[in-house]
Image (tube, rainbow over all chains, first blue to last red; front, side, top):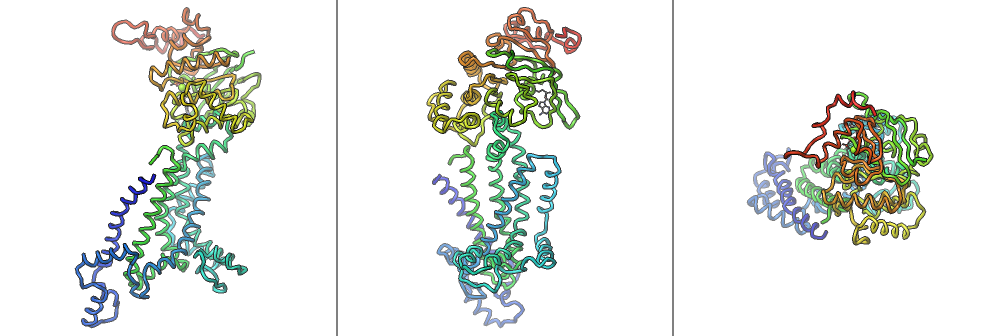
Length: 334
Length: 284
Ligand SMILES: Nc1ncnc2c1ncn2[C@@H]1O[C@H](COP(=O)(O)OP(=O)(O)OP(=O)(O)O)[C@@H](O)[C@H]1O
Ligand SMILES: [Mg+2]
């Protein structure tokens, strides 16, 4: 097991270097030079240009710049934001809990609804329920997130006035972050109504972000269950006189979960991409919105560092999923 | 009174190509403590008729029968939950592919004890003791260790022993063995068959043995039913079947035994039997 972990971590290193090169090359590959880009429409004098170049280290050879950057990362220094001058890492860490809270809620929602829907659809394959669920899943899967988010806002916030449009909690409430998770912090604060407010802010973004993973998980669960249900060992379980809920919920599901867990793991990447759009639509103060804002502000150190940090998270999650996969599949022993 | 009595069983499957009649009016009976062999060519409906008894057919199957009586009860008309009290307890079944028949995600011990949990009120420790005892009965060495093995850590023959242990867990009155040795090595085949015969004698249960092998029939069975194309064409005790087979298909089956080989080629059923004969020949 430990050996497996080390081997996987060793594989992560080249992946990480690759991602860092891409993130690093990203701003260098854009047309024009970075200093000019940062200046935007303002006209700057050649002296000022040279001074800025030197200040930001752009006058050195590109390899030196990269190694310097990489050296910083190893010690946890992702550079400072060009706009706010604060360290990229500390900005990231301050905003990350918001994204994490949203992502966890979304993936939980997707799993809690998607897995049972997939199971029932498989057990009742061909029924109207099955066809209905799979039809809706197909729609959900191809839903443009931006449009879907706006639609929900118009209906629930606009027409029904049920949910707020943006942010994580009403401005009425203020308390210092403890865990960074608004749902938990609002409870800890003891202010009445704070939890309800946090929850109502969270609902729509969660639904929007969960839509695609939910559709994918439901479809994957259904097909995995269909495959497993025709296996001999399911017939054996029935031949033992076990009730259907045990045959399906234990013998079949336990096997079907193996591919489903992989799917859920892959959805984490999709979730990160979705978070960028979702946070923008709902002004959710997380890293997705932070990244988009930084692109507009031409804050390249933030874009570069943010990309890298997101990549690290996805790699770590995938590693965890691989470990989990081994734990739930007895045929794999490290 | 017979232990299991099937009268006029018909089975149709809904398939993409329309309705498919797999079994067409089969009747058979097994007495307590008796071994009945069912032989017949591939696709003649041997497995599906036994699965019908167990209630294990897929939903595409339509079953009709005058009755399927087990131990005096018409099991076709039982509610699913009443039927589950018989299946796995009084009737055990083992299958052709022992590896695939065990759940890869659970230890074999768990899978055996699960049957006991379902049908008896033995406590945890008693279930474990019974599992150990069953493993001894079916000849699995290092019993305690093996109980915590997963199926993929065992050989095909051992998996079939586990399946047998599982089927015997609640002392069934009837064991249905559907080609229990076909998927195994020849040497293992013999061992498993011997085990089944010994256990049958030891426990006094009745057994239905589905097989292709007339040699096995001669060694193990009291009576034989011969099936051809979804119908029973012959049923008799083993001796008279071998001495005076009535149906041309049975005759062909017997002629195709390896003992009758001449020259350098093994005989096959089709050497002796043409399809038309089944229609014109002895309607048993
Ligand atoms: N689930 C199913 N759907 C449709 N047809 C089926 C199904 N299961 C079995 N059949 C058909 O029923 C017929 C009888 O099958 P069965 O498995 O009982 O044959 P068998 O006598 O056991 O053959 P074998 O000796 O090869 O095991 C076959 O023609 C088969 O195609
Ligand atoms: Mg068969």
